Length: 548
Image (cartoon, rainbow, N blue to C red; front, side, top):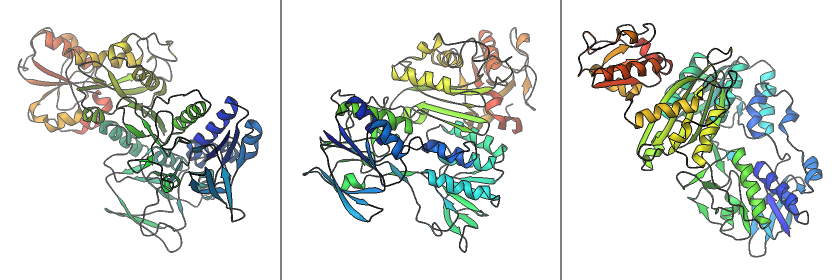
């Protein structure tokens, strides 16, 4: 069987290599318009910052080494131009020789990926504007940085790639500003999570400007200034990271069905509307495990799994791709952030009766030398306890916890299933009750009516209604009344049983214990501030007056 693969990064090379392992009799050809294949796209920002020192490390396999390793026929510098579905021929152009070439196929695999979005604005073609999609992009930017002439940089776009580039520019002692047209950076996270990370980046020296749109780029021959809809600022270089666009022109032109006119439509076996054409990677949308809707998941992790399933299906095994949860993780200076499943907003829009909680906790035993704080936002359906999503962020280690939640969601777990998981424990690795188990306990307390919390935003909207009680070990809130947990043995002088009371402490734990005791002694309307002062540092600067 002759199988032609168009595209040579994650999905394409994974499909081609797996096909040859499934059946060495297959004649597998891979064509790509670039000179590189199988490169580490996710590692590009770290080459820019010098974390990855050798540019050759970005290339997982050269065309020659991949071909020798897998016996796949690799043809570079060759761009597919049209698919003749009736005759099963791909018409392509050899970019080196500027001549037409044709490839016959029995089965065709489209892994055409995506390209960076290039906004139609004044000055977009000036020298000094960079993207971050191929090894050449990272190499060119690194060469400019190494000359030590760059003082100011602007990164346009607050997604993962933009933020990672900004981090690495900052680490090169370049004054870096992030601009994003959305209300917050980090799409896929709830607002309180994004806000916290924005504040942390600003405190670390990276300026973050949200709800601000790039209008133009100025300079005589090269970039010298940018303008937004709110201001102008000097810049020695600009990195455009406003997103990527799936490459579907080849599929559209030959009449393949598209998903919402954006990605190539496929079924659970990665098969397109043509039974002999399959597709995978950044050019397709795949099923979301929770919503059952088609979602775009332009991730190297998704592309590799899709390619493997596709190859097995072509080999006769009908390997279904189960879908994605949008699981993702990022490191930003001293902050880590990860997410999986649905956000609170997404879950509500899908009709779930949503309950959530944000819990600060140490990532390992608090007395262990490098223990640090993480915040876990756990989201579930109130009626069924079904786990719907999580966002975990902070200075501590977050990957283990997010992977536990992703696994739990995949196997349709309830919050109570997270409580007593027998996870690995030793002081260097975790807490005795693992962080995700602790978050599950708190969320179940909310679901069962044993705890009532409020977010900082909810408090700000109604702050005059509350009497704030500082219930920490020591008083930290100026203007709030301090209450000592151990001294609460009945009614508190000056605090009436029907007062609206908000309890605040460093992380929420001592506030919960105070809540439990006050409820026992008859207080009716008591709430705990989610995340405590650790998450809501603005509370320290708030003038507590009126009802307080």
